[in-house]
Image 1 (cartoon, one colour):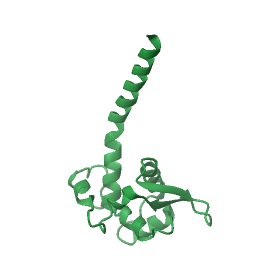
Image 2 (cartoon, rainbow, N blue to C red; image 1 turned 45 degrees about the vertical axis):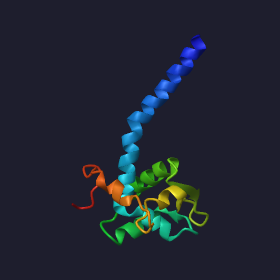
Image 3 (cartoon, helix red, strand yellow; image 1 turned 30 degrees about the vertical axis):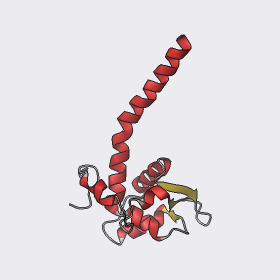
Length: 130
């Protein structure tokens, strides 16, 4: 009985944490789509892109991003399966590749969900000089 209760407590704690952090996932995904990161990563499907190259691509369309924040965003989304994370062998830094999930958020995809994600307004968290 006590073991059963411990399992239920653990399961409920897991569900509570998932509910608490679900907003972070949604906000992070919104940020990435707003910045066009799925499009950038999807352009080079055969070559995982290090954060420095993603940052350079973002800088060409707006102000330079903070690389440490970009690294955390990419790592979180890779943990959630949106991108695949590996190590760039030439630079020794994390690199990111598209996944079947990330392709749903690329604006180039015929059935892109990018516009649905952008309907959710989290402008307080992620803005580009607006």
